[in-house]
Length: 330
Image (cartoon, rainbow, N blue to C red; front, side):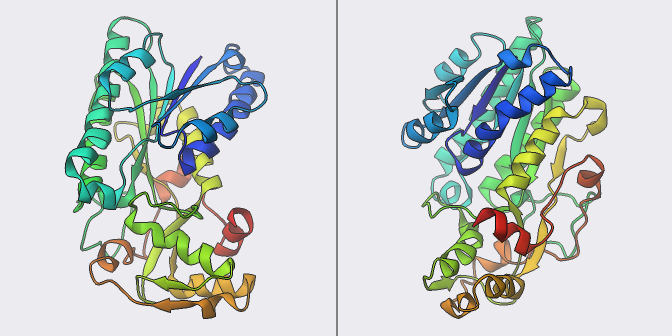
C-alpha cells in the first residue's frame, strides 16, 4: 500500500506521520490488508518547512520517504503518482490570513493543487491502477459571517474568506469526483486545533493557541477578541484520530456528502480563562484584551448551539474537556 501525506511538516502533518505507521501495522495485524506492513509512506512539504521535522518523524526504521517541493507544481505531482497511490492525506494549504493577503498563492496551493491531485487520481482510476482514497483537511472556514446562531449537519456553508471558499470548492469537487468513481474522497472540516507552536503562518485564528500557550508559559498575552467571544477547539490528538477514522471508513458509511464537520469543544473565552486558572492560578492575570473589530465576527462568534451528530455516528471523537485538552497538549 502506498500512502502520500502532503503538508507533512506542519503541526498536524508531523503528528499524523508519527501515528500513521502504527495505525497501518494495527490494520495489517487485524487482517485488513496483509500488504500494509510494507507500505511506502511518502511525506511532502515545502523546502522552507520540510526537511528536519519530516526526517525526525521518520523514526529509526526510516520507512518514510521525504520529498521537499511545492505541492502545487504539476511536475512534482506527476512524480508522486509515478506509481499508484492507495491513500492520500491532503493537509497542505495556505491558511486564512495568508490567503487573504496573497490571493494568487492561496488559489494556487489551496484550489489548483487540490484539483491537480484529483486529476491524477482520476487518471489512475482510468488506467485501472486502483481508486485512491483521499482524506482532505477542510475547515470550518466554509461557514462565513455572520456566523449562524446554530450549526449542525443541515447548515449550508456560505464562506466569506478566500480560504473558506477554496475549502468549500474542494469539498464539492471531492463529492463529484467520488460520485463519478474517480476517487474515494472524504473531507474533515477542522476547528481551531490547539495548542500550536508560535508560528507566523498567517492563521487569523492563531489566537486560539496563543491564549492557551502564552499565559501558561509565564508570559503576558494581548487577546485580539473580547471576553464574550466563543470558539471551537480540538486537540491535535483528536484531529489525528479523526483523520485516521475517516480514512478507514467504508464508502457506504459516508454516502454522497463526503464533508464531515469534526466534533469540537464550543467554549467561551471565560471558559478558557477558568481552565487556565485551574492549571496555574496566576495565568489568567497575564491576559489583557484589545479586541479587533474585524477579527471577532469571523473567528470569535462560533455558536455554542451546535451539533456534531453525523461525526459522532461515524465514530469521530472530541476532547472530554478543556482541562483534558490542556493536560495532553501543553
